[in-house]
Length: 301
Image (cartoon, rainbow, N blue to C red):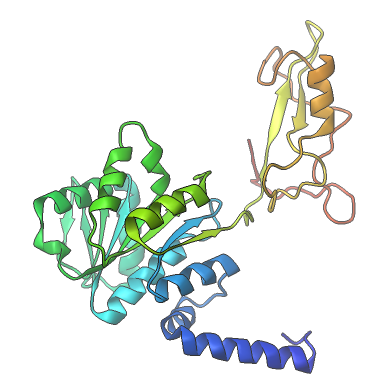
């Protein structure tokens, strides 16, 4: 902010004031969490406060669950209920602990096949199957429900468990706002169109920026019987691992190796056990054209 001109600072102040007037609960929520929200989080939370359902598709570690926590904030502020659903018990237990630390044990419950804790609390964490069973049983616990967060909503595509997610989405009351979160849903716009058809007004918020860089490589076997395999970056050198975009270009050396057969017959053919980098390694070098040092513990896949 100090680097802005007086006119820019005034414009930013006007924008913040307008946002505070239009989205008072989001303003309070931002003060409570104590850190700045990314643009996609702000967009999703604003849509939620406007009464819309939201589908948030963003990479792992980007902070999608902040939108789910804002739904919890809205439920408590309005005196209604919020359910936070997850596909497995371990995630339910983890989210229960997170919400208890923020809102206190008297406001948060847990319902899984193994545990029942404060099931009539205004905020209840549960597996998606539990919510499906509630809907079919007409449980009184659904009374006053305003928000349902469906974490890992891409399970809808699962051959065996997907129908559970579909049944919940279809059978929830029309006045319940749905917050759908996923790191791996690949057809967000198409999925959002379906949600809008069955649930009503739904905002689709997509972020492709990775706050945690992900480097991806291909292991090429050697064309020689005793030669060492080569490890080549999957994407071209100018692709930023924190913001690869849609369909990033493939490393041209990798493409050339496939076409000529110089790098081996196919990726993943572990003809040898050595790990080496090919002479044509064109990994991301950052803005100065030099290869960026990878932080300790960086994940290579």
